[in-house]
Length: 447
Image (cartoon, rainbow, N blue to C red; front, side, top):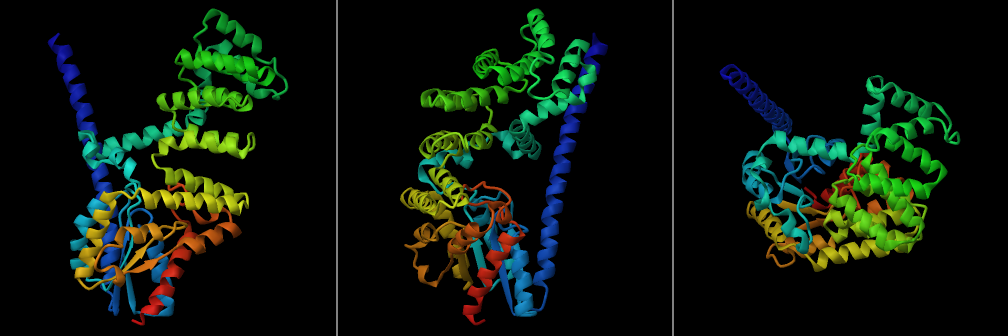
């Protein structure tokens, strides 16, 4: 007994040590990236230039437009400007506020470009859900954050992940089940009966065989979609995990075709409760050409309920309309997104943003308060309008240029993702647009 206890203790100790080692390695990796950025910034700031610009922000600043800005300024004004990238991925306004004095003292900038705040919600009614005080103790550990990222990633790709793992391990399956799967994948879609008898036989013996059930469900989808939907409901009720995402998609698609909004809403909400976040974009792609614009709007409203803010939903709708050259409705949704940000401004964002700018102004640093791509600068002006230093700030709008570019080019040419609804992280081209705009504004300063 004592020997067994000792062995168990050593196993647990080994697991704890392994987790601590992983945590340490992740901290080292984080510090390596941070120190690399510091090294680059110190190298840039050490150059004998007339003016230093610090770029303050989050992941939309880090390794983004500052690089192109330095390139353009070097070509136009050799050895005149040093551009320091102070962007930090995932950083909050609170942390930016805490770091700002250190960055001022370290780099002694003449100009500060601020594009910040997106990691907080700009909408007051949703601010509580992002309260930093509601973080759990585990959120302090990088390995726990990494676990949450991995978990979300696997959820979002569950459809592909499950089938990839199944095919990888197919030789370990029961020979009869293996034969049915091989027949299923080796025949044309219109050859509906291949493998069907095998899956039926397996399910007659064991109705809870999730793999056989899934392939039977796929076969029935080709022959009788209504039966496939009823099977999908049984799979959801039975809490089948394998390919669970696909069952929800069949059910929701069926009710979309039936124009049954109450049932669509019920199963979308059930999917969220079941923690299947990948329902968002996949469902959007599914409904794209199936329903009327008004139905799509209603369904997307349900989908985007999980995105917390109305402005993100309206922004996504606006970009969707732009992609279809529906400029009238795109303008309407852009306006609705901006109205939401103006009418429901988050006071915490305002307080922190103003505090950061106030510290910069107190050091006689020129402020370029820059709005995110596509968005109107008015909501940004609204944050600072009551401050005494308001007239000294140069506001930078990235709205008109990006909206015009989105009419001429594909969204993916300009952004790599769409996390903001109406914008995302920029491609090289997108960052070039921002940098060129900034160079034109710096020209007016006559430095």
